[in-house]
Length: 198
Image (cartoon, rainbow, N blue to C red):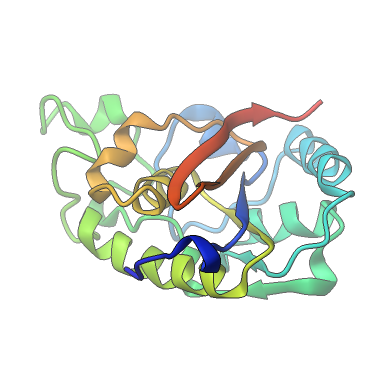
């Protein structure tokens, strides 16, 4: 990743996890399954829009999944939305649609950060995608916003902080929340994390 000098520091990025779906509510791992938002997820997405209305974003980047795109749309930013596959959720492979409890029947102690997803992505593969997004955001300067998914954004936070992707395990992230990453002088930092909209 690019080394930053104090005179060339970029701004900040706001991370938005999509509104609630049936599977996020039930705890099922959702990557390629393209579920719509629940009505409460749509309402929360509108509240996200109110919370972001005072920003003039340099970039508005979004996952290709409809739950993220719909959240961006209801937040009032669809006209500026740029969809990128790099922000797709971690591909869970054989674990798609399963809860952690179901997975642990055959893989005791499993978490997405600690053990592989058969037929899916590794943490390192997810990080490669997200590093490309981070590079774009840093080059743009100002404030950007990203609409994506829980595990993907947790890895994003780890990479922003120049940590290994598995350190995303430390960043719990609920649906329709706002988080802000930026800098203190030349050090990448977390300004706010997992803030619900009201």
